[in-house]
Length: 313
Length: 243
Image 1 (tube, each protein chain N blue to C red):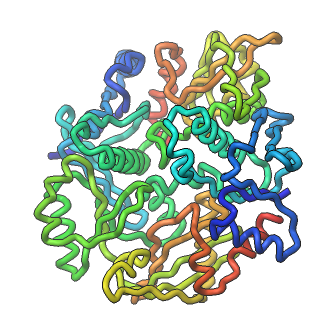
Image 2 (image 1 turned 135 degrees about the vertical axis):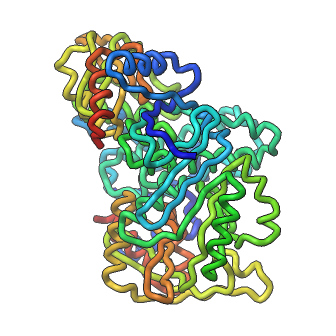
Image 3 (image 1 turned 180 degrees about the vertical axis):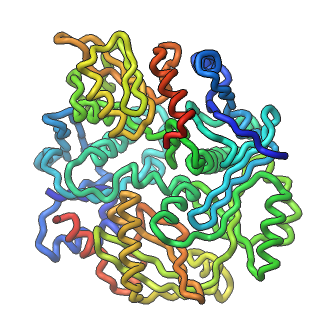
């Protein structure tokens, strides 16, 4: 049995549901909005190392957890549900919701079927420099990076880059989303603030952005042409724009992308690459829960169909 | 300032068992390990972490020990369980939460990048190493072949309480050290540690109707329960530079 879990109308989940329907593959949708109707119980030790338990949604047949062969989950925290946000943090309904998410995540980590994605793989994006070390071992170039709390070291890094005609950007080292920004003269004047928490600086890499989605062993590359430093936010700038188009990745780079997703234990991965003018492929990071639907909607690349096929095995 | 060669125990200032272990390493094996606390790391006046292709470089200048870097740190026992954030007390709640995430991301990577033997490398989400829900520990223990008590996790019930631990074994890289756990459980305990990705792990057992059953596991073992064999093994790891 294939299970999708999250908000049914969220585009990444909705597109996979449509693809499964189109392929004639049966599945069950676990709608998080019906959280009060959902029940989950299991014995993690189970039988012969296989978790045993039941997932129940009122009015529907129970799902035997050991029968789940494919799982695509995009669960949301209670902050995404206005009716829960109105409640006190210790309200039983809110606590039950969080407990369901926790136990469902445990189930997904222990499920013997195909899971997009499990926690250990998802976690690598919590530390970008940690993930970058794995990216480099997979054979991709990574931006020259300095993380420091010492103003003089940061200044020297920026000046060294400038001497070679390169800009330096700074961005979060954790999974907390940040807008990538170039270091300015104003930033250099407030480097003493590094003392409270080190900051990640990177040499800006010139070139063409390519977002690669890996689904199992299938690869979908999308070229991104943007006016901004960070294409995700380019349209916020006056006159800023971003265009997406399908792109043929060199076979050896596609192979490397699949190998990277396997090293990270992410059968579904969104890999941010940039091809430099001299032909090197630099990888910035790997998104473990990619909103692939944005790229599919703009290019027609059949990513949701690939996910559906992957889940079906 | 020139960096000095050093074996490091990363642990909290009140980690008494680590202090005893470090003193015993010095006394019994002539190994001069130093304790470095998370406060010393996080409040260090100068830290850097560089990534350039597959090359990495980490350094930190501590008030207590001077400058340590990737080449001068020759071995690490990682017993960190948290990173301090007292210096963020006057920062707004949003900025404090952001800084806590950044510190974890940065120091986990910094320690992981060290080329020397590191007993229990951090992961991207935890400075201690892999982080598991008790139900996942229970599953892996059973899968490794350890006896387990029945446990039911139910969204509408409190979490089951594991058996009270009465015995433990400290696993260190495929060797088990215990005077109270039956050697029949050593192989499965080693399998559990290997499967979950810890170099050093204390596996606790409670008493079930038919004998010992898995209770829980701790990646920061109580080293006061360490046997001479564990001291000798850790000394060997650092003397040999075993990866």
